[in-house]
Image (cartoon, rainbow, N blue to C red; front, side, top):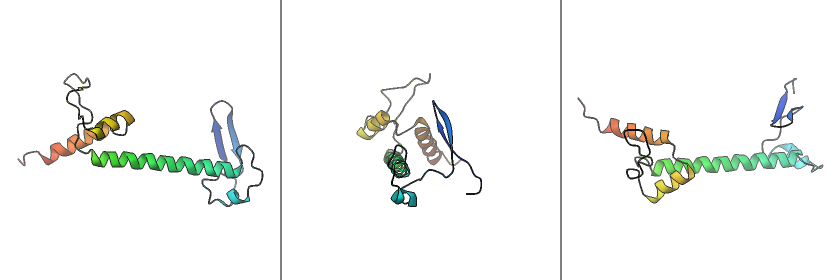
Length: 124
């Protein structure tokens, strides 16, 4: 590759400059040609990277489903002083799970509230 540096950073030991980028999944030709099977070898890096990406995709998909199913629910509610209002927030199973897993952010709920307000505003 044309002089491009690929850097891997570690919290404690600094960084390592690589000649080639790490494989991003098991479709990388280095995955099938790896014969060393040492710590951080190409086949293990490819498999780890692929697994991490799959888990992130699953989590994002779960969050998307929660947001779609719970749109309009007051998953989080606050009083006039900005404190969490346990009585006013939704008690449905979906909202309880969303609060427990932190899948619905306060921003998601604020966007739902604003969209609802716009739909229900008088036209004058």
